[in-house]
Image 1: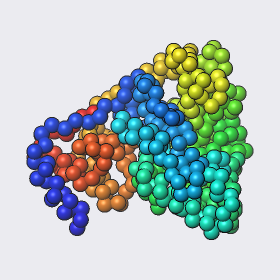
Image 2 (image 1 turned 90 degrees about the horizontal axis):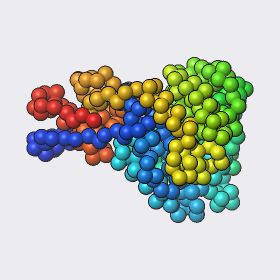
Image 3 (image 1 turned 90 degrees about the vertical axis):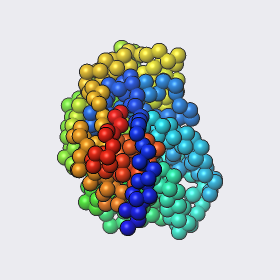
Image 4 (image 1 turned 135 degrees about the vertical axis):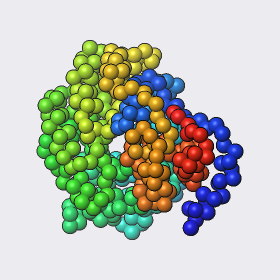
Length: 398
């Protein structure tokens, strides 16, 4: 068996391993979030360059535009991955989750696709998804279909159209994404949900079609200012509960709120806790944070000179008491029980054999990379096995 052969090959190398080191989770708000205490991250977007203070505040990354199809393939068969690579490699270097955003979306689709036949359109979508998967297949999260209620792609008839379900093109997209991103959590993403029960019900129709086929791993809700500034907290709670009833985790994918300093702070203080403290919400990603560099004027929580606005000051204080402490994180702990034992060893083996695509712990993939080389492989399994057999005295700690 190839897996066993790989274990044997790496044994000699590992006999010389005496000191191992793991990456350290960033400080600031990200530290207060405490990815180590389990379930939630507080992330943001990166545009064309990485802000020097990024990990002072955030511990998850989504490219703002770089990984959208129109940006990545502006001319047919001419790929532009440079900016995606920059952001992806940064996330890897900091050991924080990366979300690929997005595979199928009616906005920012490549302009050249409209002139193709349906057969060629389908072939190009398949090629796009497969190529993205080959490069970024270990992304923790992937927005497979973005805004299906509001921005259907022009090429949807080529990939199934409405079909018998009314959403065959969405189902097809997730089927293709599952093939190319077998290790990633596949998400659907939509705006206008957090403030509208009717829109939520329409969204749930699509979600339940995907869920019944085992194709979707989480629900994305955008939570932009045009909904968040005026929504009531009671409506937010109602909608979060409706989405949570599916049993799927919720990811707040594109959060921003506007207003002068006082108003913006009041909105964050009133509404952010509703999102963060809901048990089904597993991550919150703001859509920009420096004023003058966000898509919507007035949505930044840092001023253009990088001084903190009142909303940021409030958010830091809130996360210090609600984000969870930065507990010691044990490398090798794949199920979040703070010990490394035979259960973790079995989970790692199942993962390497392709029987599972993720671990039952948000930190699992980071903790599984025991030699910190950016990959989870037979060497990591051998390290854990040797530790459990008491051949080596300890595992590294984050």
